[in-house]
Image (tube, rainbow, N blue to C red):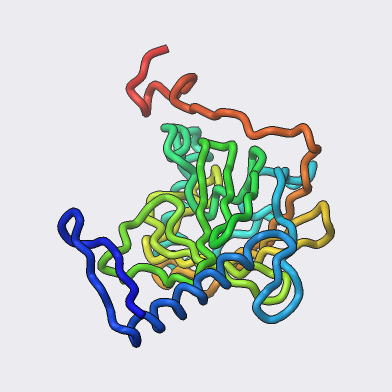
Length: 259
């Protein structure tokens, strides 16, 4: 038995022997198993069925828009603590403190999970997709078993590269490759480009989802920072709306636009 695929120049076909074909088939079967386990109600590798995260979720009333509703600060190193204090002192004097989102830049991770606006979660084979109304941002969490790209091929982005796996009814997500230009919320809470995020996402009940977010930053933090956010399932008629910050942005002193 040979397995062929088109590759190289147009029309070219490479063929492998029986041994390679069996290996290829086995790899495809493993990938298919991992992918199919993503659908709500699908069987999970170690028993049980995949929980249903699908729907539109909103932060409960009174939760606030800060990354950390409790108001705690990251466990900063002395260097980053001094930077944060200087920025807050400047704000106290009435000086402008830069917020990248005021220039219509995306909030990025983990700030996107503050969920100032609704989040929509889709479950498809091999991927969980989180669509944020805020800045029309999309997070792709790959659950097909792939690893993160090698460090020399990982281009830093706002949301980073996320891979996930199931631990029982909890989706465990690992995110790397986030550049250092994002903030945690509207205050000048910053981090380095070495930030690493782990999430544990689970259903508390059918209408409430919880995301335990652990942020590690060996440059800016002295220890991991754990923040837990919850989101309530929105009504059935709720829809994600188009969000185009540039259309009505009035931060002319930062964007160079005109009123």
